[in-house]
Length: 415
Image (cartoon, rainbow, N blue to C red):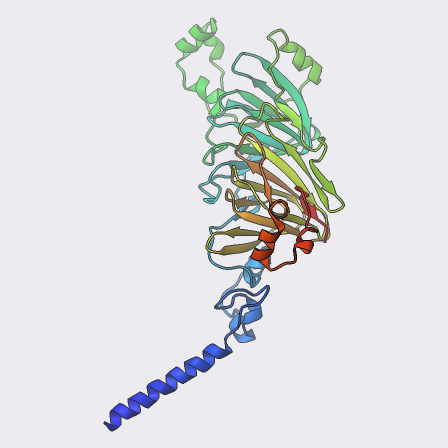
């Protein structure tokens, strides 16, 4: 009986201690909403310390991972990757590095290649099983392509220009002038690899000489000196002026739509003192039937407003600056990630997100969608196009204040 009483007292004491602890627990507040509380603001120096093995240089690339805001909650797939951590394949005429869904599983709709062609460097004549969309980032490049109707197209492109080659259309690329060219390639297949393409030299080398002779109506000996290994990226000769190359293929007709487009030469679809958004999709760049894209320029302190895309995942290529993006999903789940030049990000279809410029220079990020047209839903635009009293009941905000929210798809808000 005495033992029972002693056990009872111990149990009651434990319950009392738990009640006290529960009463002292953090109460959810604005900007600090979760139970149990999240983030460093709710921790202690001892708990925050990290005495184990570290790589400070790597940790410094994404500070938000080391100390997420208290509004972050739950787990999400890794939505960050970077060309900066991918190995380059280097040959005489240039190099390339790639990120497919194999390296970046969250990128389920497109893959990307960062390629450099030195002056005169040639990306061997080839074609793909997927469509190829590209953004020039530096220098100049000559493109050649033949469409499925036998119409040739040759053009020179520079920084800010795009091209699109439908799947199966054979093409080539060559760096021009003293700078050569650097560009981003995007394929409308998440597993398309730059190192697994249909190359001109590969097919010739793997076709019997008799068949080559019969196919081209010449002696098989004509082909006795063909390369036995592919060229991929080789050092070529500087091409003649564009007009000379164009004249050499004239007479076969022109494609229905040009395969090139100036993205940075377009009038912004959204613009104010905080930045701008420039857009290219099948409504303007008519040859690009499977890829839509926007370049977003955000001034220091600016905010790419809270929004989502209902028709496709957003695949991002960070061109310059330092930004911080938060993604919101069901659960609730929210994750904040830092980005720098050369990084890639992904936002799954219909998941809310916003981007802050946290640096001292403009952020420029390319947003790519595997879709024929760009679509966006803006959070503020939605709330200002719903009955004010309904919104007020959800948010406990005076309808008169809601009426001052930005209307329309403003895009970028100043700091």
